[in-house]
Amino acid sequence: MNTSPLWHPFTQHALQDSEVLIDRASGASLFTKDGREIIDGISSWWVNTHGHCHPKIVNAVQEQAAKLDQVIFAGFTHQPAEELATELLKFTRGTFNHVFLSDSGSTAVEAALKMAIGTHAHHGKPRHTIVALEHGYHGDTFGAMATGAPSVFNEIYAPFLFKVERLPFNNMVDAFKDLLKKNGADIAALILEPLVLGAGGMKIYPPDILKQLTELCKASGVILIADEVMTGFGRTGMRFACEQANITPDIMCASKGITGGLLPLGATLCSKEIYQAFYQKDKSKTFWHSSSYTGNALSCAAALANLKLWQENNTDEVIKNVSAMQATQLKRLEKHPLIAHPRQCGTILAFEVCHNEQGYLSSVAPQLYQFFLERNILLRPLGDTVYVLPPYCINETQLARITDTCLAAVDAIRAGNLKSAA
Ligand SMILES: Cc1ncc(COP(=O)(O)O)c(C=O)c1O
Image (cartoon, rainbow, N blue to C red; front, top):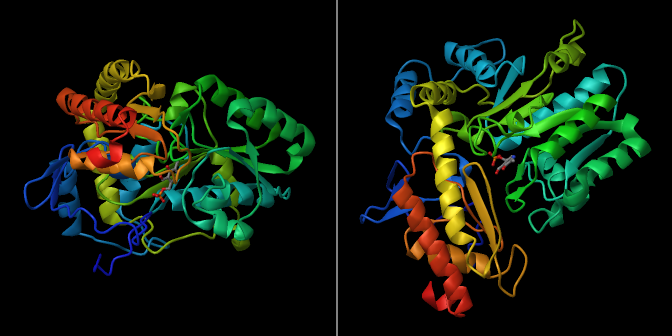
């Protein structure tokens, strides 16, 4: 029995005895005190980019901590945040005009939704409908949860969530056209994960669909919110997934990789028009949103160090190499008869395992997780979807080991002994 007073996220403590105690981390590896080395195949929930404890980010945070830790961000500001906003606008190639800081992906999404709804309201034409994608995920706070797909994660909260119109994954464009015809003047925003629906099962859709949805938004005054919390900072093979469709959303949410995975930070970037809707002498039109740690100086210093590393390491090229290595691994996987829908988007590789139980709560996911962990690989399947989303410092040998273990796992499923093998 687990005697820890900690209540872990996404963990059923009644079924899980204990957690793996990690002592330190370096590069793509996590280490236990007794010398076990675990390859982090999911970048510790998709946050880590340049590798764990990257010395340049660690140094930047240490230096910042000795100088200024945290200061109230209303009425006050500080150099790391100012510099970060400027650098982020450059990093996103001048697409946006302003940056609102918060502390997670969910809070970046909450800010985005409030910006979108507020923009229409401040223009004197309030709109009340939010549109999202089937299988979408935007976080676990209530607004973010409302926009995410209904699932076992949120079903008991459903009566408390605002209503959202959802576009079916296989027919997004036509469904959006229909909605616009029926109710276009009331649609405030379309929120979507560009190109890859992460938590919904690493479902990939083509840039052309994203482009068409964007054009429909622009033509109908619908604010487009691109949630790049997972896809941002290189995961899809470019800095941001939106670049692949050559589109400019009105609002973009970033988090996770923004600090290289070292400290929590959320950023909601927006166009001039969104900012202008709130920029009025009337105080009631203020953007009434904050959290205590908004603009935390250490997180900003980590994010700045991350952006600097991006230049120094030529990370644009690094992610191309990781994508090429993943393409090689995919070729090995796609030959296996029990591997369905093998797919890749940039550095992300995913597939479904064929077995006779379906759904997120099927027992195959925990058995696979255990199978991988026993072999010192951290992969956390989403139901029957296995995915590899590594830090960019991962090498070919480590990726090949992950693939070997995936193949061994599906072989064990075929032999009917996944559980006992784990
Ligand atoms: C696309 C997307 N948006 C938002 C979030 C929520 O981010 P956080 O867990 O930092 O609140 C996630 C988390 O996985 C995500 O994948």
